Image 1: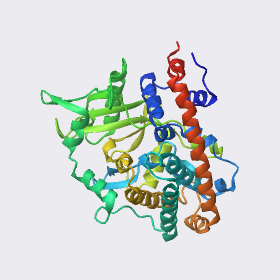
Image 2: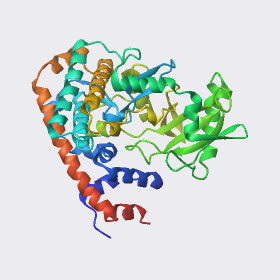
Image 3: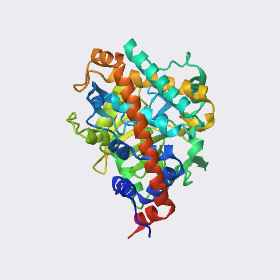
Image 4: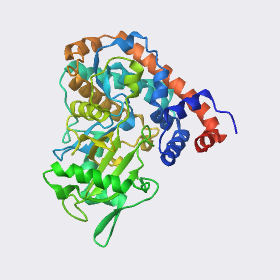
Length: 408
């Protein structure tokens, strides 16, 4: 067996203890292209950042911790209206706002070749993101992408999400037999449960609905292990199909996701709020940073471990950048919208859990020097990640990565 590089050893160590079947899917996605690798290796990415840089002594706010193209999306809020916002908070914590900025700039640097952008177009995209972010922070008012006023690619995405019916969503991952819905185990969105997991999930929902106003709503019909995302793939995550408001077309789908510790918080090494659980950290920060959060969002305990719990958000309501290869204007529209959304989320996070006040964030952002430094660090980290991907790819193609995982 070929010898593993230090890069691949680090990646496997950072993913130790995960469900092997889904971990293999994650590693396959990481090998496929540099952006997939970038998405799945945030802990590795953090090691490429100069933690001692003054850039990371910037004002702190609540941050996503993993800001990139695919952690934005459209979803129905608990008021049943559709919003475009940051939609992943696994790494969220109190941190310098620049952590999010550098991660997003590096995302552009890693993805630009796959989007058929030349170096000058990639840099222009970074400048566009920075300009939209800084303008929104300077305005000081946390807003959201208004459904009636959205334009371009964001308008199309929001309209698509608004038109989708509950039956449309359910039909994507389930089938009806004898008037009852069952999850379709297809190896792409869902995998069958391990032995005994259904029994544990039934007990969890039975206990959960004791305090629910409508107990029949949470009656479990079917469940599966869920295949979604990249960074968290392999951690415990379940798709729950429940009765909702009636079978078969008014059933609800829930996402039950294990909340692991934040790699960003660990990297910073700074004191964080005394969260009673990692799930409470994720949910509390998500509720503050988003304009409106998804329906049913809450922190729960399952098998004495922390999980977040919310209504299912379909992957199809993310921006598909692959469709816009070689279309810089379209990509720019989306990135500028993301810059505004990130700024509004950071503004909402100011003042919570000893984070900086809005005025401190505005004063720092208004200066020019930090912007040049952020772009330089983002570009450098992107180059490091591209080199790491090539090293990992050689190990993967030689069979060393999979063989190491499958060793008894």
